Image 1 (tube, rainbow, N blue to C red):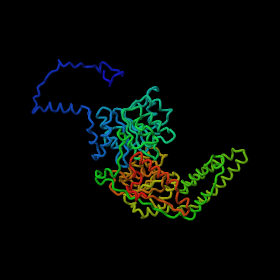
Image 2: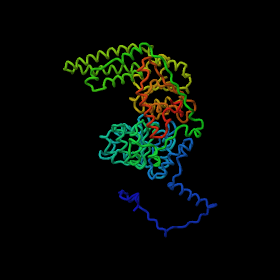
Image 3: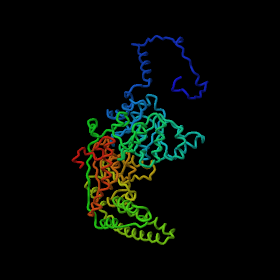
Image 4: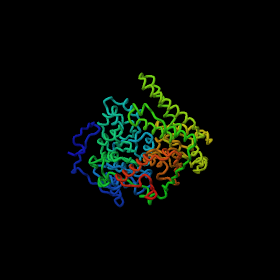
Length: 572
């Protein structure tokens, strides 16, 4: 009759699982002859310990290997008040969302509602998340990549579901997003708890991405959904609404027009900033020091800027649709803001594509357009090749910062440096050039790139955090901007190029500016200042960022979300 087992079928081996009928009439009373009834008290205490909690208090999570901070318990307390635990933990970068998720998960396991657990994370975070849950909460998660899943499928019959094989697993979002291969199995599986780390990656952004489709599917195959993101809002109301509606489809009626008050009373979102919990941080998490370091562009750089703004592309402005040439110039400009090498790579790739088109094209007018564009790109290529490392102003500025401007001590194993850049071509240039110009020993500079395997990524991070490692500089693409703990040996960070995303700013800075950081984080943005008015100020980008900030303020409720200045005058 119980709804816990109603409608379910089970198979029993009667010789091993023979049921025992308990009849109260057969109860035998035994006198407790122990001193002060100690045996009875111990028996009662053991029964109480085995009894699953049924209230809304924290019974177990605060006993984990963590500092017991009240603000980290609040998400679990908020979730336990719900009939089904559905919550977006959206605390600012570095406040300990993984720990908050572990506390809630521990409480649900103690209540018998955490037998089957699935964690989705980006590939760079798999090992770190797995280690945090095991070392702090003794919650084991089997790490599965595409190879691991295939290994499981090879060991079971073809019609069996591989997601039934392990009760508690952690898998990369990108491994599972392949609809054709895994969708059927996911639709047939069910979990007690699903945790989605870096949830901003599964939000809907205009097109229905594979990641967002995966998240929507999984949100229907579980009891408890825990979402983690320090930057859940990208400035578009629809993307944040998609996350909230995965928790509760009735939360936001109009995804294009809503305010924080529309979903506040449902208890689905909890968001705090460093200023909100400062009194509990006990000196761990000092205020960051941010400076913008600038340098004038060299003459050859100014010439490259001028060449870029003057070029036109017949194959894009004419046959490629309206605005195609302008869009490509913007792409080139963005690459040039990273490095001349990145822009040069983009130019070469375009030239290779045009050369292949020229070999196939038979129409004489179109061939003429292609030849003209190739000549234009050759001229732009020449101006970029003139920017040698000695003429690359931002690289010279980086060397100035490393040689004394930032106060970095390469001989000190506890003073390690993190450098971020978007372009992989720029990463390769810096990885080749910096050891030579700084006279670094072999192994003193290591790289984190998105095309590395997850095990390589985590091995590098572990070495960077190890006191006896010889690594002094960690050069990162934005694959390292989400979730990684780089604060154990480092409190200095340099943004070699500035991403056109305020969310990426926060994610990057949070690698060293996070709880348990005892030294003041020093963060530098490197900027090349051009004399050309169109290069000096791209007002369109600023307008977009301001609008995103305003929209996030309206939807999520904190106008100081991105700048962190907490003052209108300072932000202006």
